[in-house]
Image 1 (cartoon, rainbow, N blue to C red):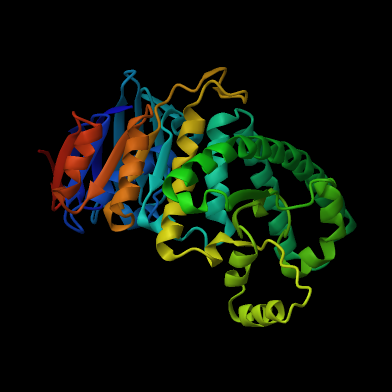
Image 2 (image 1 turned 90 degrees about the horizontal axis):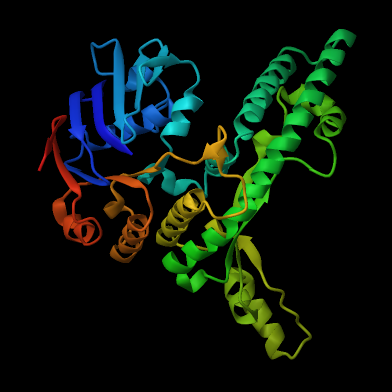
Length: 407
């Protein structure tokens, strides 16, 4: 858990030095700097911003770098400095380290903010990252395999972009890369699949709380990005000509995805879901024709309302925490040979603008029961009575023009 947080020259946050509690509420107007505080924590954990990839976009004007430093409850310290040229300096307990994953292990962060509320309609990357966040923190062997896979994939795509026809030497080199990709892909898929299966019941429980009317109709499916019954290198070889024409690798772990499916309860609901063809089906039924209506299956994003999608995405993220924190299950929860020891930090940005009162209450009550730390932002103090029902000693901060003061 973060005990003290220091941020320098990040957007309009010139110098921030605050002592945090298990629950922290940051209140301020739009543009005051409250989201920037969450951005700083996320930057420390992930090595990147959730708003802009380029450091010069979030480093304060006329400054060369932005720095975030945190003292943890176990007296450990984490620090990151991002320079305008994208150079990064990382420190763990005053010692320079060279892999962001080391800090990520020490400070798991889960973000729920307005920008994540469109992940059902976006490309597969955000949904794949949702699963990989869990796998990273729960499977020690996943990250080295993922890094090695990405390195080989980058080399392969670089060659595909340069050439439409490969020499014999290049073909031999490509086949060697494909063998490596296939080996890493099999392990990555194994890790993802095992965590996905463990995640399913937690997702179902979260749906029953946030979207009870859909409790029996929404389910998750995992797609590996390729046919896992056949070695990836064999499939890559079969598709080589098409990949050369397109200039990139079309199948593999990097194309994996998570889908949320909706299915109808029965014939009546199936007719309703048919839309324009429903009248035709009803006429056929009235004519006593032998019409058999199957249970319909559809992407949840095509069925749910905007508000329901927000609740679904909240359920997806919220359901990850109990799984991550449940040390009693049968899957491997070890990191570097020990039980998961880091307290997850949940970042909630302006949730009152995205969720209704009932959903907010379920979200807060669930978080209050878990051993995690919460930082949440709000435009007004209206949320404080509800927060104090669950965290009697929550810290309240007011932000104005980049200055953050404890209330």
